[in-house]
Amino acid sequence: SNSIKIMKSIIIFGGSGYVGKNLIRGFAKKGYKIIVPYQKQINEANLRLLGSLGQIVPFHFSSLKNTKILSLLNDVNICINLKTSWNPKKSKLTESIFNFNLDLIKMIKLSTSIEKFIFFSGLGIENRSTFRNEIISKTEDIILNELDNAFVIRPSVILGNRDQFLSNLTPLFKMSFFIPLFGSGNKKFQPVLIDDIERFISKLILTSNCSEKLFELAGPDVFTYKKFFSQIAEILCKKRVLVPIPMKIVKLVVKIAEKTPFSPINSEQLALFETDNILNNKFPGFDYFNIDPKKTISAIKKSL
Image (cartoon, rainbow, N blue to C red; front, side):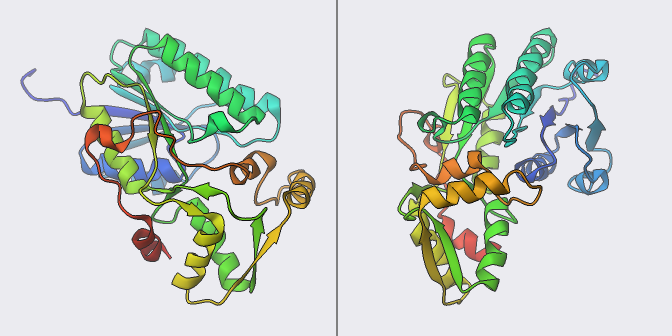
């Protein structure tokens, strides 16, 4: 009967990545049904284990032209897009970010059930003039212009349980006495915890008339990369020497390495280290829902 409150269902594109898995875990605890369409092969069983039986539904699709996707979008209340690409090829970036969202917008407009569309972008994209950031800026604009019920989330570097940032750094700190610093290591960043992101998105989903459309989410602590690396070494109780490498050299090495399948970082990602990546307080953030983001260091200790 209609009197039983039907639990909301959520569709998450790009849900099999680090942020996705953590959001899914949080949403599953709250009882949501979660559909996770994916294009690249993933471990479906692992994803299903994040919730109770039948609560999480992975679904393989090759393109949005798949009619099943449209019927799914007519059956969910919330659509979240976490799908991002760091592909160095411009055509691939245009296709997987801009064109993908264009198609998704069209389908959301046709959907009778979707109450909110939430797009994840990144903090500071307007400060970095790389092709990827131009594409994401254009994507943000078109989403906010075309849909009344769309929201853009710009998180800073996300840390927490087995995050990519620390997972990539930790082995280096354990093995090597010398730790490379890109440039001087004096650029600042303001990492945010995955748990706080999840709390924020949960609030956003439940808020019926939200006046703001664009949010920037960062934690309370600002670090220089140098300070941050020193603290990791300290937490791991390792004596480490930080070696600044001039950006010119780093760029050259990365340019060559990104042509191989083994490059740990590409030019687009390197751009993150060239500008400060901190809140400029032009847009609302955690304060909008009275959330106090947690201090990062204690979480890093736990994670390491």
